[in-house]
Image (cartoon, rainbow, N blue to C red; front, top):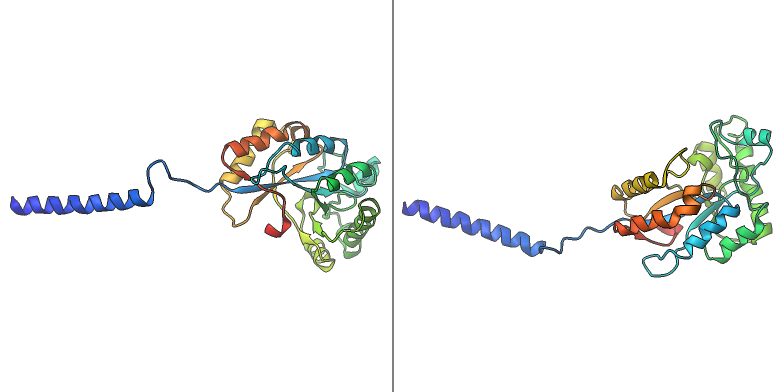
Length: 256
């Protein structure tokens, strides 16, 4: 019996020590999990709806307390005629009403004046899987024409950021971007371009993306200026993420 008593006391002491050690490392009520940081970016502008996006961004605060800065990947001269659109756009493309720097120069300048970053999203929103567009000459033309139009409207810039339409990053696109000195900026689709996607579903999708994010840099969410869920409800979507503890930070391509 004496031996049994001593064994019980020793085991109890060891268990107490282990529990105490655990409590010391993780005090009750103080367990914290660092939530993912996220940035905002927008494709397919500028167009009139972009102004609503800009108005909302001016009300959203990043973790430093200042109005958040986003990345805008603009089109230079998106086609307006049906057959031109079919020449450039993907065969499944539904949202044919896209913006362009040449058509809405004042809105493009407002984006720049507000301090947001502007990137190249090609001239025509080109689907680089078309055989007539997946050539070094055609791809380079999309870059060069974008640069010429952008410079004419926005002035010279040393910011060389590129996001391919439809996130198609094939050999021709990658090699051209690298040869011309562009940083390729991809990201995570927020879901606003999916047909019939509701605001609640976008909230759930973006929350799931950030909850699973485990990379050592912020998650860059991709929205679209021409989608009602975005230009009407962006503040709700972002506020929901912030309420969940995810941290909104300014767009900074150097961190990606």
